[in-house]
Image (cartoon, rainbow, N blue to C red; front, side, top):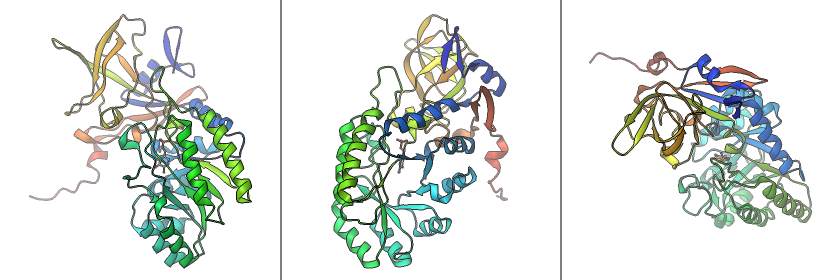
Length: 410
Ligand SMILES: *Cc1c(COP(=O)(O)O)cnc(C)c1O
């Protein structure tokens, strides 16, 4: 979204026109931004044939997935439902890697029957996998490298008390199960958490993986997961993907020489690919001044974008209806009967009731974490592609909420 001649636009289309056409609340995604992000990852890892597995859980809309596939990325899924959506979007089973966390073994069996790549994240599943498939279906292992990293404890997944992965300290147990059944381990995987800004963490993680990799002669890939942070506000610390790409590629190439074979380098970015492409458009319902605070109450809330309340995340807010209005300080809140603050003490161009506000960086973990709390309806989704705004999900109706309820006589 950019400010052109005093008007906020996406690919030259005024945001206000999009809001008028489709109504608010509305998620809008810029297809160009998604393509650019994939391109910039490829450039960052240009020293190797990087295999980008987009982490679908960030944003699972079919049309977005089709766009991502068209731009040459594969996909990482964490549920069978996501896998089915990926298939529907045109990904082949071979392009899909399934990295579930603590699921019943039947889900893994289903994943195998669909032909997906599978990363196992606990010894119990590995044992069952070995018993059932022996050496007939290669799999990957998700390791927990025991590194505490990431923007927020809740999104940090690779530390010693995290539920994710098999501890690197349990390597002997992994070895024992693998040898017992002749399981072919074709990949090693880590995902240390979201929002890692220090290149060194990625390199440290890589060193740990390399030391483990030496024990597994059948590898095809090493999957470094994600953690690529984007800017949420001006001056924000971000992951320097070019620095990570350059240095990681270098030590990876050196490792492959030592290993004796060229392996594939995989990454699984979610946020990096879709965060900045997305904007949540909302309308100011009320402007309410108390003796201490001026609130703007909007027609959305934590039911549509939970990140501010769940992760204390910052989402930049703009008044797209009044870009030339004088600055005032507001606390922007939702309409849910909970404290659902989108942004406290924000300087915005003067907000009048009916103005459209834009919440930025809403592409990742926005719609995909939305709910019907307060029996509110989820927003529509629109993608701006080739200079046109296209509906990619209809706004919900009351019927959607009632559809699965079974009314009994009481
Ligand atoms: C969520 C997740 C990702 C993506 O994380 P981002 O911070 O959105 O890039 C990658 N891999 C796995 C296994 C995940 O669960």
